[in-house]
Length: 181
Image (cartoon, rainbow, N blue to C red; front, side, top):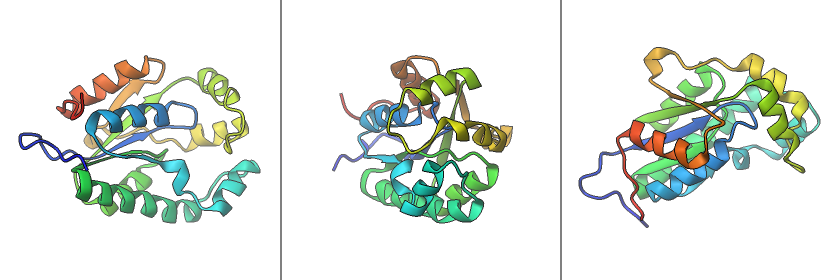
């Protein structure tokens, strides 16, 4: 287990958020590597029923999402206990979902929104063969997305920047440095 160094601030959780295809998983994996913790892929916390629903082109309801958000929060809490930090990818499209995550994690939680326009997102989604989230659900995600409020102090970044640039901007925004070389 890699623990934060003695002088490092307790980072808590970093949640990379946004609609499907924005690059949450790519950035999240890079951040987790830099911070010395496991990457929590939000997609892996969905129930088989929710995955089947999305694969079939049906958007999830709040009732589908609450247990998923609770599982992500529990895994983030465990990662913080073990590593001092958690990094997760989770769409977290609405304020209520972000509030649910914050309540479940009960530590400093920093959200990072990756933004791209619809055409760019569709192009990315169309190049992911075998992913359960079909491009047909993008419009429902865009309609659901509530940009973080100023009081949430989320980092909002353009998704089309190179992944390493995004990682470095998030680390700078956190006031963190890589815990691994």
